[in-house]
Image (cartoon, rainbow, N blue to C red; front, side):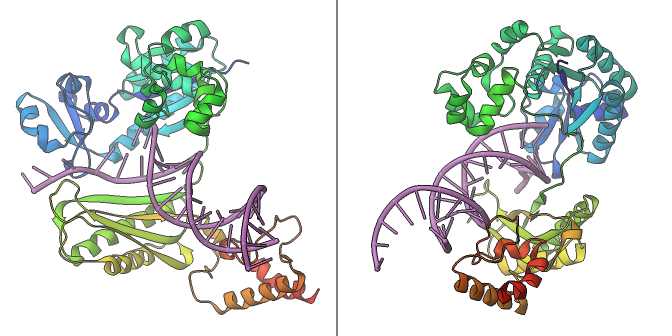
Length: 420
DNA sequence: TCTGGGGTCCTAGGACCC
DNA sequence: TCTGGGGTCCTAGGACCC
């Protein structure tokens, strides 16, 4: 069976959500602002037509924009998340499988639809009627092509919100009109690199030999080229993979110059990070704290980051907050005007796998194990401790072993091995 | 003691996405 | 005065081992 993927996304999603709950915004220019009302993060076509760029600082355009009759909202992520769930509930009725890719985009599997394009049009009408959110849909035999099709559907009003790239001939013609930097996965840096090789549009990229793509763009680029030429490389991810890291970062909005304010900020971040951790069912082996001054300010710059390891991986907000404050204090230096801070949790694990971190905390067992391993390996001249079926483990590089759940087993095995 | 290739782990940084 | 907040993946290079 031929695969047909769809990428459906909400038009000016945050603005559209605001319009659903406040009809006075309909047909008006609307922008939604980031945290602290710092920057513009969403604009309606009317706002775009006024020349409001994405990401522009709000204070730069505020006066002229409001004077011209523009409307503005602070972002409300709870609302957008709720609307996103409603939209996806509609997708579920139209597709066998749905991958929620971001708050406003989902990949759908429409392979079983007799006429995918007609199916997509009905779906689009239904989403609009049931949720009030306008969408665009791109269709293609791979996810990269569905993305490209979605981009074309948004750009070209005559397509009526749906673009189908499943037919190879039509595809070749349309891809030639898609600029290289509009291909999913090709950003500024890679566009420049490709331009140096004379590749400027998606059709040229699709025609590139995969080997060259790999040389110029690395493996990710090779995958993009293959998918762009219709070769299936990536399937839908129906169940989201477990998070590998969690970050909570904020700009201050006001200059921060005292340790007390900084501690309060990172404490708040740590508590929120703990909530996310528990919601995702993960635990963090360490916490990283950073803060820095404003690039935009003509003053001495400073950027610091520090880490604290936990005796056992944790998702406890109090433990996270206490550690974050200790790191913030350790890093503190007076005389700077700080603009942003954050905490990052990486190397997340399932709490059930949490074992004592013997590497970062002084533990007599660690010294004992190292002595035992040294003795064994000296005697045999090679690593004798790896259990059968486990690939060779370097005896002197213990860091990995100590953090792995296998650790306890291996510790117990030492005397046996020594007796051999 | 010197040299080199093969291999893994770790970190930093780049690039991309929304 | 005010300039977003999340994520993932890949590569290069150093350390360290046999």
